[in-house]
Amino acid sequence: MIPLKTPAELGVMQENGGILATVLEGVKLLVNPGVTTYELDRFAEDAIRKAGAVPAFKGYRGYPSTLCCSVNEQVVHGFPSKKRKLQDGDIISLDIGLKRGGLFSDMAVTLPVGKTSDAVTRFLEITEKSLWEGIKQARPGNRLGDISNAIQSYVEHRGFSVVRDYVGHGIGHRLHEEPALPNFGPPHVGPRLEVGMVLAIEPMVNMGAYAVRVLDDGWTVVTADGSLSAHFEHSVAVTSDGPRVLTNLPVR
Image (cartoon, rainbow, N blue to C red; front, side, top):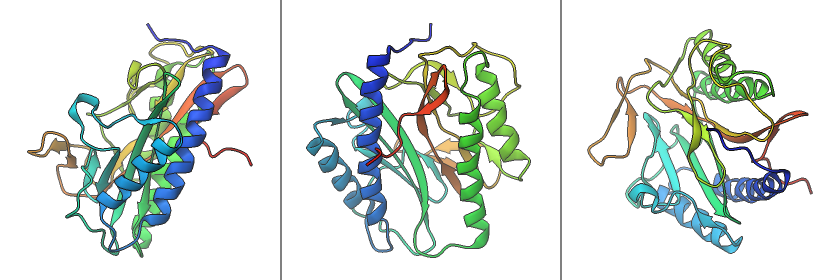
């Protein structure tokens, strides 16, 4: 059963999403050649705790850090490390979540480090746009497969592939709730979307083939062919007015 959120709960999740987006903006400013992923993680945890929230990922199923810092061929769940110093031309996916008031928020972006090629810039743009193609479908009466198919179609028509082994999810009182949300599949199938559902929509896109594997640390997922991978995510509420992104920066 897919949990529905009340307007009051959506209000808390919107506040949480604003905090999370603000923290991530701070992390993004630190992303430069020479910075370690450990430094990014320290900043993120301090900022979340100063905001009166707790990191959602740290300790979750034994994950050791606040951020997932996935560099280049790493798809998701890359460990921050004092030894991983960013290099000019890298790309880095930053996945971050928090809990406050009993409710979770979750989001991700992929950034270039220093100067990257036009091909990489296009790859990142298409991955981010695929997220928005999915978000457009988060409307009452649509089905879950409409989101999945919009993402897959947008990505594959532009020559890239979507990861099959890891998916988006519902979010709310738990970090991962029903439903599982694949980034691929036919349209017009799956649960019908209802007002009050909140979905973490998160396309993971590879420049090469979609196959992935897990490193010996048991967490870090990498592309099987060594190609680059990108990841964008927002927590999105289904409302009577259409999709509402909960992880936008607050309006000042």
